[in-house]
Structure formats: C-alpha cells, structure tokens
Image (cartoon, rainbow, N blue to C red; front, side):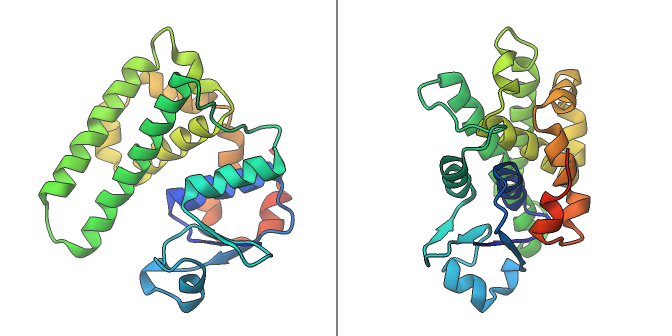
Length: 215
C-alpha cells in the first residue's frame, strides 16, 4: 500500500495516526506537493488531493474519513474504534471536528490565491471561533466523557485543534480555554500524536521508521 501525503495537512496526519495505530507494516509513505499536481498522485486521485491510499490490488481510496474507516475495519486496531453512528453524541463530535478541520484548512488555502480578507475567509474564521466557544462550553459539561472515548471522532478533534494551534493561533488563543486545554492534555491520542507530530512529519520519515517508535 502507498499513502500519498504531505507534511502539514491535518487530513494526512489523521490518516497517518490511524495507520500507526493499525500497525500497517507494509505501508509506504509517498511525500508529494499536491499543489504541483504530480502525475503519480493524479493517477491515484484525479482531483490531485491528499491523502490518497493506493491499495495493492489497484483500488485507490481518497478522502481522509473514508481511508480511516477502511483502515479501522480492515486492521481493527485495539486503540482506535470507529464512530458508533447510533450514538448521537459521537456523531456530533465527528461532525464538529471534521468541519473544523476542513474550515481551518480552507481558510489557509484561500490565502494562497486571494490577497487580503474575503467573505469566505471571514465566515470561516468566525465559524472557527464559534466552534471553539461551543466546544469549550461542552467540554466542561456533564456529557464531556464522550470527548475522551478512543474513537475516530476524538482523533479527528485532537488533530483539528492542534492544526488550529498551528495555523490559526490568534483564533485559538482568543477562543480556547481551560476545558480544551484539559482535553488535549488527557486525550487518549496524545501519545500517538506526539509520535506523529508536525515536527516529526516535517522530516518526511518512512513508515517503518515511524512505526518503530513506541508510545
């Protein structure tokens, strides 16, 4: 299997963490710049978007959530389970986390092509602040235990929040509080995400090196 990714994408990071937890020993990491539309990536994903997973039988998977769900179903990792789609709280966390990740990424991507502020960027940043305020309140409520379940929603949420810290520091600093800090410090995925850190991914390691690191 080949996973096409880059070093800063939160979508790449959440898939890499899922693959790490799944112990996909034969996985090969292929580091690409999707903005350059490399031919090899285009063959795997016609949209030239990452992450993309090329399976050994020639089937290609795209979109981070689909890839993560496939890896969990195939390898059944002990430390990560799929979201229970009959559990409204888990589904709610999944929706919030993935939308947060997508909005944060889109706001950054817009800056590559549009000079100055624009309505899409303003709406996105306002939504991120609102989402953080909502999460801060809910993380201190009686139902906060759902945030600490070792499922895919919690993993997405953790990666999304750290991406906000990385790319939207002012928004995060202004809106996140003690409850979000507590979540990040006690998340069931804190250790694996220290292994699959942005700093580590910046070195573009191969997967065998990455998976040999214990947490």
